Structure formats: C-alpha cells, structure tokens
Length: 463
Image (spheres, rainbow, N blue to C red):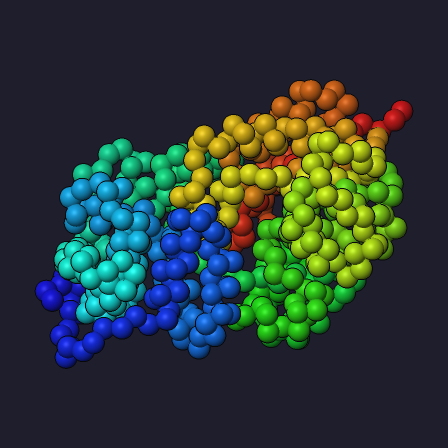
C-alpha cells in the first residue's frame, strides 16, 4: 500500500482473524454510542470477563479511549475520504473506521495491520459486503499522516472555533464554553493547552481515607508516589485493584481534584461541628472522605442520594455505614437536619472530566444546560435552607462552565440576603487555584487534576 506515512510494508497473505483487544474496543465503543454506556465501566467489565494479558489489555484501553477522545478529528478525516455525510453510514461501520483511523494516525501500527484488522472486524460484525468499502476508505486515510491531514483540513476551516474543533477534537460549543471560563480567570491564552490536555490520559490517583490508612502507609503498600496537592493522594502506575487497601476500602480511586475541593471546604472554620450533610453523595468518594474527617471532630454525617444503586455504592465506600445516616431520595423534597456544613457536589455537564470521561464531549449538548441549571439552583437553595447560622455550603462542580458555576452562585446570593460568599484560600501553598472572585478553580492543564470548581457560601451568624 502506498502511504505518506511510510510503513505500508507488504506481508504474506493469511486468513484474517479479529484479535480480542480490537473486538473489545469495538464492543465498548458500540455500547457507548448505542446504549449510552460509560466507557470506563464497560471496558473494565470487558477486560475482567476476557482476562486479557497486560499487552492486549493495554491495546484495548488505548484503542477505546484514544478513539473516543479524538473522534472529532477522525470524523473530519473520514468525511474527506467518503465524500458524504457520516450519518449515512451504518453506526458499526463508522465505529470500525474510527478505530482504524486511530491506529493509522495516532499509533505505531503498520498500515497493513491497521487496515487488515479493521476489514476483518467489520466483516465479522457487519458482513463481508462492507469489507471492500472499509478497506478503500482506510487506504485513503493512510495516504497522509496526521500533520498532513491537519494541514489539508484546517486550510478549509474557518473560523477559529471550527479549526480547533477539528484539530483538538471538541465540539464547537464546548470550546466556546471553556474559552469563556478561562477568560473569566484571565487565562484566555490557555485554551489550546486545555483542549490538548483533555486528549490525554489522566493519572490514576488513590485517596488514603482518613482514619483508615495514612498516605505514608498507602505509599508503602502500593509503591506509588505522593500526589501533587492533596495530603491523602497517592499516584499509581498500574491496576488499583491489586492494592490491598483499595480492595478493603481503606483507600479508593479518586481524582486529586476531588480531594482538593474537600480539603478547601474543610479548612474553612464553622461555629460548631455537629451535623454535616452530603446532598448528592453517590458514588461515595467524597462521602467516605467526609466521614473520616467528621469523626475526629464529633460531627455526624448524613449522606443523601437520589438513586438506590448509587446509595449502595456510598454504603460500600464507608467503613461503618451504620455510623453515617444514609438517605435515599430527592434532597429538595426531604426533611433533613439543620447542618453546620453542607457539601453539594451537583450534577453537571462534566466539562471538567473530558479526559477521564471522553464520551461526554459527544454525549452532551447545549440544550441540556437549562435543565441542569434548574436542578443546580434548586439543590443550592435546599442546601442553604438547611444551613445553621455561621455554617458553610461547599458548592462543587466538575464543570468550569460559567452557567453552572459563578452564575448559579450569583443567583443564590441574590435571593438569600443572609448568605455571603466566603473567599476560598488555596488549601496548598503554590496551588494557585483561588480566583480573584473568591472561588477555587482547578484546571487539567495546570494542576493535572479534573477541572473542579468550589464556592463557599456562609450563613451570617446570629447576632
């Protein structure tokens, strides 16, 4: 095969067969598209079921997440090769073309292997009738490497949002939202850096749950390295399931950004430490951290979760679930105790976790924002209504979108005269996440964490 990439070496013809790594990657990507499955959960399940060796498991992981992250880039290339709307292609065929494009343009896999394995896969999944089509399209893809394709595609793309959408593989509306959020922090020149980091794999981070294991003990047990910011964080290379503390629940997998926002909320003092609330507690990572912090100061934690299966995950994350009050239901409709501290980690678009949950960029839409904002306003109002004098609400999102962060906080402040914004201090020297507004923002391209937002709202103390 003639190729500008220079690795189209011929090989003896042999009967094609589909290796398990590529089949698993296809099945996960197909489930993400057709069933709204979560890629990380479906892939983990598939790897357990097939018991792949380390090499094949790594290949399946790279094929799955790499194809998801760079789907927008590959769709632009494929579209140029088929000269028709991609919506006209059968979804399984398009998935195979994306997988093949990732191997050709972003992995060190020879052309013959990338094309041949893709043709074998589509024949097995869809049928022999489309094998020739996939072969022809991927041969066109292979004529150029990615830098050459980028020059070709960008030369016809205007304006800037469209160019970035192709090169950085993000929908234009997300790029615009991230640009606005960065500009609000005087970081407008960092847009491409943020988009680029969103296309990389995040670190695997463990949390040493207070009262159950120390960071030092977890370091010794796991062979990991200390996190950059959190006193509980350990960075791990390898499978967390192999760490005994993770299997026992003394430690868990939790992004360092989630740990830092809990730390930032916890360091701000309150008048009393009697009752804490976690209003959206599932799947339980922050609740487990709060439970460990509450016990030494004599506070009781009540964890609320709408969905039963997520509340069960909360219970499993706690060492002694009976010492935490677990409540299933809609927090806005429940009678809950007045609290000194309330954590509200609200449902959101998730634009801060795009490298960890790459499918979200293709699954979310601007139209979802309005419904989420309504929920966020109601939940924050509920949190404030349950706050004792002098108490604090920690409003947290894993989205930097201004419509889910500053605008929600401003809406609440305008309607609650006895509530003020409490300036957040950087919980760690050198973090540089505290904003001029008084909130805290973590960025993947700066802090190597999920993109997290924290605002503290304090009820005025009784005179």
